[in-house]
Image (tube, rainbow, N blue to C red; front, side):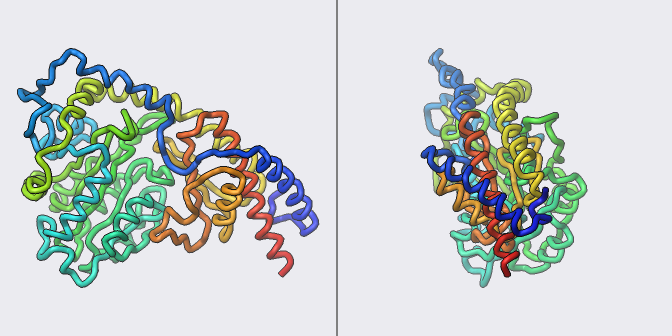
Length: 426
C-alpha cells in the first residue's frame, strides 16, 4: 500500500520494519560511494592500449614533432576527430587539456579580465552579472559561477529542455550574460533537448551583446540503452539565426578514455576562436600534444570511438538496471518518489517527498553510503523543495552497488515515514 494512504498504526508498523532493516545494514560497516559520476576500473581498462600507441617511437603528426612547442589550438588531426564526433568543422575546434571544466572556467575568467568578443567592457566592470541555470543541473557549473560572484537564476528544466518562455523573458535583462546547458543526457535527469527547444535557444535575442551560451555537451556520445539520441549542431543553428558568436560548446574524453588524462575541446565560431587564441597566447605555449596524438591513434575516427563507447555501455547498463529495478521494487509501491529512466549519461535523478531529501542523505551517510549532497543540483545547494537526490551508479562494482542502493531505498523510506508520522501527529 502507498504510504500516503496508510493509517498511523500502519505507518508505525512499517517504520519499525524498515528501521530494523536499516540497523542491520548499519551494522555491516559499509563504505560505499554513489556520489560522483566516475568510471570504474573496468571502464578505464578499456583504454589501456592507448598507452602503447607511441611504442614505435614515431612522434610525428601533421608534419610536426608533438614533443616540441607549437600548435596552440591543438593538432589538426585531433581537431578533425572532435569535429567528426560533434558534427562541427575542424576550424571551429580548440583542443585543451584533460578537463573541459578548465576550458569553461578559463572562458569565464577571460570574460571578467578582458571581456568576450562582443563585450562593451570586461565583466569585472559590470555592475552585476547574472547567469541562467536550468535546474536541476550540474553543481560544478554553479560553483564555478559563484566563485566569480555571479547571481544565479534558476530556470525549470523540462524533459525537452529549459522552460523557454522563462528564458526568453529573463534574457531581456542586460545583466544576464549567459546560460549553462547540458543538452544531451543532462546531469542529473538524463534529458535530451528537443530540436524545437534548441532552435528557440539559438533564436534568442539577449539584451547583453556578449551573452554566452555555455553548451556543455559532456555526454554527446554516452548512450547505454538504445540508439544514440539525436541533437542538432548548435553552432549551425546559432549561425543560421544570426548569432554565430553566442555559443561555446564543450566536450572531452574524460569518460571515453582516462578520466584523469583525457583531452578536452571547445567548439565556437572562427571569429570567437581567433579572439580567444589571441588571449591564450599570453597564457600558454600549448596543451599536451603527446596526449592528443595518443588519442588520435587510439580513437582514430567516429566508428572506432563508437565501438569503444559500446563497450562502456555494456558495463554501465547492468548498473543502471540494478538501481532502477531496486527503485521499482522498493520505492514504487510506496508512492513516495519519482525518478527518470535515462538512456545515457551517468546519473539517475530522483524526487523524494518534499522535505525529505536531506534526511535521506543523512541516513545514507550514517549507514556508510556517500552520495552527492541533497540540493547540490541547485544553485548554492538550495533545493526549495528539499526533494532532489542524484544517484551515480557508475563507480562501484555491481555487488557493492546493490548494497548501496538497498541502503538508499531503506533510508528514503525511513525519511518518508518519519515525515508522514510527524504530519499525522500534528
